[in-house]
Image (tube, rainbow, N blue to C red):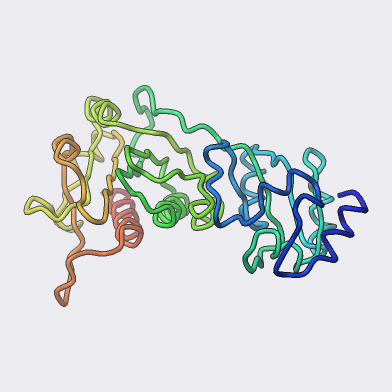
Length: 279
């Protein structure tokens, strides 16, 4: 940051910031909660963990803004992108909320490409999300999938953008740490033709518990397994269920009919991966 810009930013009150007085690019971050930058093909990376994971994935920010306490660290990491430093108070005023993550970056949004071709890796587990509209739930699911070693995630129609600010934040940057593709009914049909087990999380009468679900034939065949999770309100559409080889449920107690999709997905991913490994 140039010295005049630093002086303007550092001297501002916590409630207001005249963005036009600072560098023009900072206007992208002004009143951040009110903005949807996806139309501009931009994404927001908040905090060191998310920014580092993006960098590890080969994503270079257009620019990064950090507090003075973080400046030395980011100057040492920023050979390929500009860094601007300001006081913590000024950064909170810029984004218009109490920002405690030390650094925030703006980067070009990756393009989500369709899944194409046959799956050849044996015994891999994929996560497929269908109409999971809440970016926080989607981000939490991708964080769990990355942490448990799921091979990749397929995002069907109606899903939130994985590169929304809330999705990136909920995933702790792990949207950059797991392969992501877009998917549709043709994708599921392709998996089906290639011998995949497609397991739908559902509450229908056909749904079995993990203990009741026999995956031994699948494991011997060596094809991939796809776990599909749908919308919390109305589940998976009939045309998706018709392409599934199995349906699975989590037994509930005390009259509870279902769990939050991120919680249910985490349990099912863990149980399926353990079940597959043991057969």
